[in-house]
Length: 119
Image (cartoon, rainbow, N blue to C red; front, side, top):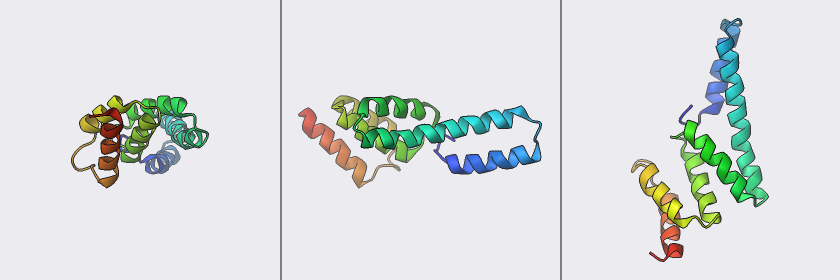
């Protein structure tokens, strides 16, 4: 789940529930995955409505459980830039994005944050 593979988690947990229908932990885990899916989908809706502060809160919360979810990391960086939290964006990119994850898009956001921050 830390990689944001919500769909795979959902499928596997449904199979677990079918195999062990009396195991309450599977149902609890499935409920948690469904909640995370809804939260992730709500981020895009909030961005479309230009509600970046609320989107930041949800993304930050999701990143605690899904720390290696690259798409969420990029979305979070965009949100930080929209909220003019330039220094936070710079720190997040330099500390939470590994060399393997870096690409042109992330380099662009880092350069943009440095530019607007005046560094």
